[in-house]
Image 1 (cartoon, helix red, strand yellow):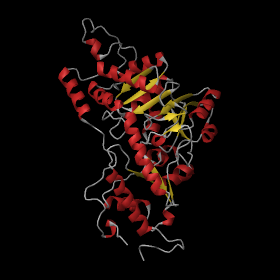
Image 2 (cartoon, rainbow, N blue to C red):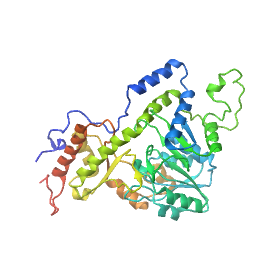
Image 3 (spheres, rainbow, N blue to C red):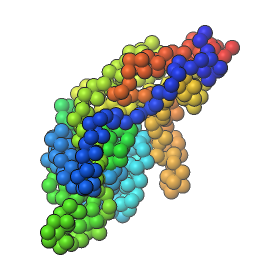
Length: 406
């Protein structure tokens, strides 16, 4: 039997396959250089160009680019009137920013458990959590697979609630023929370095509501009635502070990257889908591994490829499995440690891991594999070879006897 590198064997790869490197090409470099030479590097015309491009791509009337999706989520809740004493329902199976921003508005995050097939927030669980204090629902389109947004919209409408989509993973994702971010509701995208579209750091909010978009822009730059570019025009020094705003704007340097990234977003999504298909075909031979489900009417964004492994069928736990993949020079990750297990949330709200059993159960067994457009056929085959090696060595046989460690 081919011994894993973790046990003293030779690794599959000589060089390390990283988990999620950004796809930066010469087009982005030249675009950034052009902005630097222009002598205008903060928010200006490039940001406006990027906003128009995002609107056109998603089908929304307005896009507002910001310095992060976190800023977008916070501002969206604030502009929508979320305040102290309110409650916002979201998922525990997400990055902490989804819940942190709720606290920043003075409201309380209320978690609703997930559906195990897509890791997405359960509409049935959302309904159970609605109280007289509920102000909003913040569903998360996990890994690039959309939530059952039509059902959530119906729940929101019948309870007079707003919906703010955490679409950090979902640029390019479609649900029933419409792109996430089409403007039917407030949608917030992330352009962090690991995302399908990156501006290094950054984000955007899309909406069809002109007044809402205007307020987002106002709050995003100190509450000024003129932006930095306009203030340099003749007479531009005459501005007002209409609201006590924040410093959440994107820069033209970032927008220059984003414009080029957006041009090939669909092409890169297809490349990600091809990687996902290779993985899914491979895992058909392993009945103890659950692969991502893609529901009908969905175009998956494939930001992540998460698998759930039944480690009861193996001689190692999840942490050792990740270390063993690393020894083969293959990076992997875990998405996510549920928010309700983080120390702040445990101390403040008294949560226990099993309070959201589906989220906890998935977390204990989830492993995310590398998936990005620059992966070559050799890279993919190396991942599959490493997985084959680990499964052959560490998997228990059908009688429950250890296979590789005896």
